[in-house]
Amino acid sequence: MNKYHAKFFYFESGRALVFLILLTFFTLAYAQPRGSDIVANAYSQTYRVSVAEAARRLSLIQQAGRLERQLQLELPDTFAGLYIEHHPEFRVVVKFTSDAQARLAAYTGDPAFVAETSPRSLELLLATQEELGEQLRSAGVQFESGLDIRNSEINVFVLDPGVVSKRVSTLLSVANFVNVRKTVGFIETTDIAGGNRLTGTQQICTSGFNVVEPATRELGISTAAHCDDNVSYTSPAAALVFQGEQNAGSYDVQWHKQPTSGTPQQQLNEITVTGGSVKITSETSSSGLPIGAMVCKSGITTGSTCGEVADKSSQSLYNGEIGTYIRVHNVNGQVMTEGGDSGGPVFGSDTAYGLVHGRGGSGTAAHNDMYFMPIENISGLGISVLTKEFKVENIPNVSGSPSSIPVNINFSGYPRFPVDATVEIVTCPDGWTCTGGTTQYTSNIPSPLSYNWGCNPGTSSLPVVFTVRTRLKDASGINPLAIEHTITCTAAASLMRRSIPGASPKAGLEPR
Image (cartoon, rainbow, N blue to C red; front, side, top):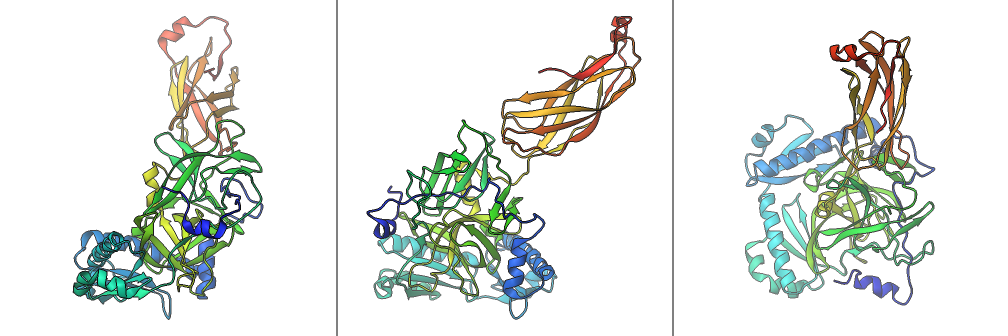
């Protein structure tokens, strides 16, 4: 399959483009304090409410997402979808085909959630949309379709509504809730842009989230699959190594690793955005993202932009297969994404929503809208978003008989190996000689890391307690806070019988 769209060649044939990937694991000078909530600030400005009220509403939107998943699972025959309204008052509208008030009351009594009756279920809408798409694909018709949850309808956009209505007349005769509308264009991937900042590549794109391959514990970076496979960054030098991609239908994602040679660069569970940074601690799938929810994106062309989820079931043909993407609209008509933003992260206050795929077709009402791939689709490549910070969680106090006592360092996240563990002496009993030091772990292994503490009591009496401070540092220079803990050498009759008169008591980190 050709990797690039015809639209790309139409606009850019005859001249080479240059690809720039903005690596989210490089720190930007303008990063703002981590405590600032970029999404809450954007909501506050958009809807003219206080930041505190914005945070309250965003929390309710998260609750709405969880409720939507639950209702789809438990009441598929009667649940008709839900959406968020921000004006004239904030509310979550939850729709059912019957007994709406009673059904909602069984799940929540929050006054922000209101029940309404709908003529058909969400399950029926989705099934009809899927059948419609298959018939159009089989007929070779280019299309874009979406769900209107508010009116319980399906809108399908085509170049020639008359011809299409004849092609799918049987379906339309039994599904009078399908509206066939004319369009002048379809979703365009946002990769059509030139630059002169790197050599040997063809496109401009934006990196998405830092990712991890759980099977190998290796870190990487994501972007859109329709971007170039060969990407690099020059300051500092970091030519990335392509790992794999999915580039058709609902999948527009690829990922890369850092090279094994050279200086490793830090990769944190953060993304950089215009004027700030966002720590990513979770992934939110499309099923937990209600219509009307605010999401933001970061791209190298248009920076940070935010808008409302307008349709999370937008279907069209992508590289010959039917794909489903999420459409985002800005209520003020702001352009959500342009060429060069492809692959950029779509996010909430602390969660990953997806990767930028494209924008609406030229000349259409959705031209300023953004389309993104939901984050759960990256799992097809065997990767997940990096949501855990590398840090030392705890080091239990331990005790044991000489001469070797194991100590476990429990950590979270995915450090880049080799990892150094440094032991510093805090308190050493009178008369003892205590030795700290550093030991290195070269294999990429899960928590815990372990080292041995040796005790040679000589003629000294036991037990004795040592206080030490242990810290980790990974190969990229990430240096979590150290943990203070104790090690107790207890008496052992067999060892005491072997004690050498006059020997000096010693204790410390044993060499690996």
